[in-house]
Image (cartoon, rainbow, N blue to C red; front, side, top):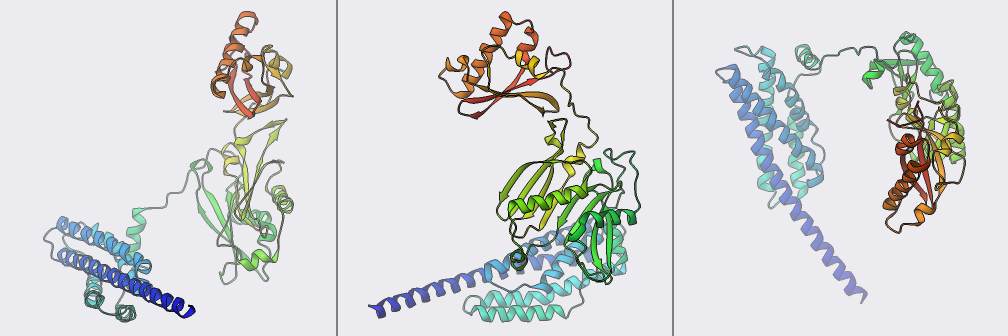
Length: 470
């Protein structure tokens, strides 16, 4: 019985291998055929551009070559998945750099191209003419040859292409000037958020970044240098500076990049690269320990003490959200989010952009009515079950009243949303008949949120006149 089972398994395994081999052959045949078609079109378009009688004809031909190159590149990148081939570095390099470079001569409006442009186009034609015979051979042999033989042809093509003069782009001044003119660097104007604040020199900002990063940066031995680059993350912040750490040879000594405003505020921290299993196993931290680490960072980040309002564990990360609470009023718009690795406690990212987006905003934190005056507006059919809480909703200061279901709610057996609407109407009608604050009662309810099956929250707007809400 065992022999029969083994024989059957070997047979099915052989069949599966055969099917896989046949599929590989079909993929290779199709792939090499499509490569040949588009590479011939690529070469033809380049030849046509060199013989074009006008610059418009030349531009059209070069644009056609760019389009063919982009299609070829898509097929190249799918080859490793569909045919289990090794990466074609030389082939892919020629196509990628060729597509980038050809936009430069395609922009030329003179009667003729300059010598450098002509030379690079000839190099691309040489590349196409060298690769085409190998692709043709692969297409023919894919029908009746093994995958190892096809890979041998692929390797030979790579070796032949690696001997060619590559497209010259990295040190090509004229080409790089063309690229720069396509997307010139425009320094950002001062942002509105930090307008009027004292700005600092790059060296002073680097020192602030190093203080904030603390042990996350100051672990290496020997002299460490803070490197700076400028850019922007939003028009409201103006120009910002990215800082990273390296040794005297320029080798990075930290995975972190800290982003600061020119007035010295830390906006973001990003960590490049993943956390290794070894690094994760070196130190295990629970939620309480991670919160303690975040609190230490918060002390270095700002003089304003923020309150932890949300903790979330998701996959291998712990998310902590802090917001300011000013005179017992929470301001969720100004949130600061920390992301830590839950295995090691390593900081993954820090984002205070939401906090600084509302940095200059004045939020209302002093109600016009007391809690007692506000509760009196609700009417006798609303049973308040606890102390109201001041909150900011849509930038307006409101009282949130916890209430239990009143007689008005018990009168209806429709859906919760309909019952809630009818209860509001009942309370409103009652207030219209007997309450002196008729106008306020007619519009005081923003909405109700079911918290439990029998609990609701009423949100009452405190407008400046205490008679209506906008």
